[in-house]
Length: 360
View 1: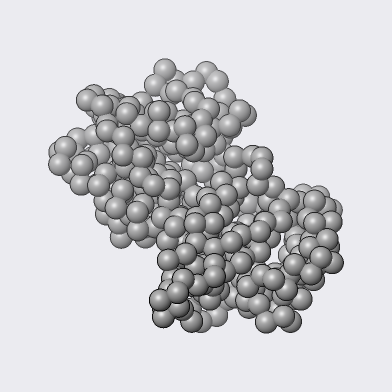
View 2: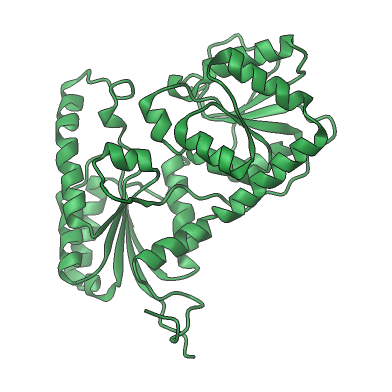
């Protein structure tokens, strides 16, 4: 059984990967790291302007003919004509071309108010951009079925939600009482105001909890802050230093069409932290928490969230351990390596560990 040549994959990322710690950038970097364990990967990344030159040079060098497939990570910005040209040429060469559409918040007015000429134009061009990506691709992938349907996908869509890192496996200290929220407390769609009010209510009902918020500068609530709120700056990898104090993680997103179809990247990170998750009943988030049995799905609003916090605070230690172990198990099942292997399989790439008898 002779080992197969590792497949060669061209990744076009519409985000600059060498800088920034935003959710999409972290997501792509982790997926590429996992892909490189199995196939040869070449990357062209950056904004539209940053990609044009490298893509044209890639074409002129003839290197496109040497790859076995193309994978495109789209962004909130519209694709360039050079992106579509490379994708179409790859299709003409008989190479599979897969495009991942991470979101479509432009079509939800509550998240994309059309308050400028530029936004008006962007909204009008968005359907054409999606048509261009769809035409230039052999497969389209989405983080959730809800997003796929919102963008007009029919049949059984290919779902490629965010993956989870390896479980951190950090023991909770005796007396740990912090809830962990990663994100912007001042961002309405993330539910920060509801969370702060819910903690006040839960503390009034006897739950001696506080809140650790990991956020970027400018995303904190307006001062003065309550004494039980602690703001930290930490990357995804640095959060491990906080986990000893963490009792549970929280996803307090409010009702909304977009929130129901989104799969928050932070939710998959939470699984790896190995702590129970308290989440409001957004469709995709609730599905993941419920199926994995990794925590509690609570009712909307401050009262509903407070009720969940009190319940978790008063829960027997055996329940907390069970939820924590379920979260870690779900993180392993939904690892970035699993996502990479699924992508490799859909694109038909030979990969590390595959023998000639099992190929194709």
